[in-house]
Amino acid sequence: MSERFVKHATFIVERTYAASPERVYQAWADAGVKAKWYSKPEIFEFRVGGREYSSGGPPEGPIFTFDASYQELVPDRRIVYTYTLDAGETRVSVSITTVELIAVQDGTKLIFTEQGAFFDGHDTPEVREHGTGLMLDALGKMLAEEETE
Image (cartoon, rainbow, N blue to C red; front, side):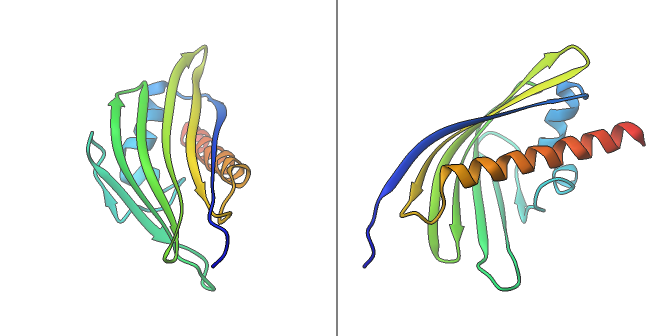
């Protein structure tokens, strides 16, 4: 058996969007809109105690499974959820995520804070932080495209 260990880490990724906090919040709260910048959820219950579930991956595998539970929702201001991430049958991590939306001149400052337990080297906080940045960039691109429509 390989070595078992847990790496605990916190990272913060910030973005500023030229969209209102209400619009940014809706991009997280509406399954159809969220599917434009994130994976399409198989289960989407955007309410406290609700669940979001999606799975997928490259044809050569593995299948990644995101299974989240919403802990706190403050419309247009804050989203807090806990989630597990699995690669195939392997639990990769367990995290708590806070998304804060702050009104700024001409838009919204988003502060994404993730506190995670990363298991046995299957993923690292650095890789997750990089992926989170790409995800938030995709959100920004989608919001910018809506502004030009």
